[in-house]
Image 1: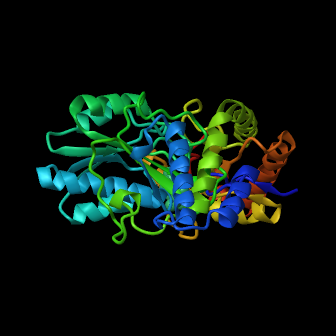
Image 2: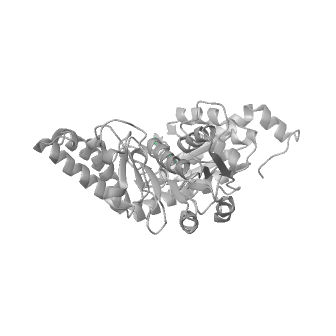
Image 3: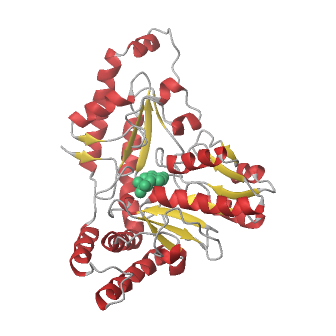
Length: 396
Ligand SMILES: *Cc1c(COP(=O)(O)O)cnc(C)c1O
């Protein structure tokens, strides 16, 4: 059996997204900046896509900027706030320790440029509290950037409370909604969100395409210089096939959000129940406030890498956390942020499914993981030490 269970890393394009992509390559190849009809027809389609994306998050079309993906949108959001903050003498930013590296590495670079960043704890359940955010705010805080849902453990943050709090204090709020978009409902008005990043390939759209929402009135700084595309804020000829395809995928995902999340959550709960039966294992992150398709488990006494390779040999594509850091032997910064010790943080498994998976596939995953964990533990010196009492178990 082949099971793709790494939808948090990327998704397969939906039929709608693929058909749209091809249609636009064939029929709308004009440059939207060209003045003749072929160009202007492409321009009309570009603006239609902008309207579609905007309507999915209750934004206005003028508030949407197309980018090359989630990473670029995160960089641009934070850079825009920082540029404005620097002018006003406000050089403090609040974030969390478990953001995506597109956010964390941008913040670390800003620290070298003289900004101060407060990285909030995310507690054991993988959730930031609005109180922690409130306590971190200062007179010179320009931005709070906290992700909507975490990409490794799938926990959903109290975005609306954080948004309201920021609005009350006159601080801008950016959220990396790459994992949430298309999977949970987003309303930038109701949630008081000032900036928000999405990426098409996380909701069955094409790779290399995303969008940044910026609330009207907030100045956007461009990080790519060149032509006047995207009202001068993001140079480069627009990738219309990808943008139209993203819009179609986003609309499809948002229209089906209730049924798809119900279906995924049912399968996800099967996984959580089945994997919990494995002795000395632990679900990472809150049970309830989580994405419909993501689970993350730790198994004591084993290495995440070996687990993944053996699951791959059985046809299961899974991950130990972030696709960006697997390959490195460092434990996940997310698992360390929720307080797991190094040796346990190494033995993690992320499974991210979607509504098209089946119950049979979940049963197959549960059986395979149990067998592989058993097999690895039998060869593990760490497991030996745990069993003979030389070391204490961390999980029951
Ligand atoms: C995947 C991901 C990104 C990066 O998006 P790309 O389009 O791949 O650049 C950023 N943030 C989160 C939370 C993600 O899951």
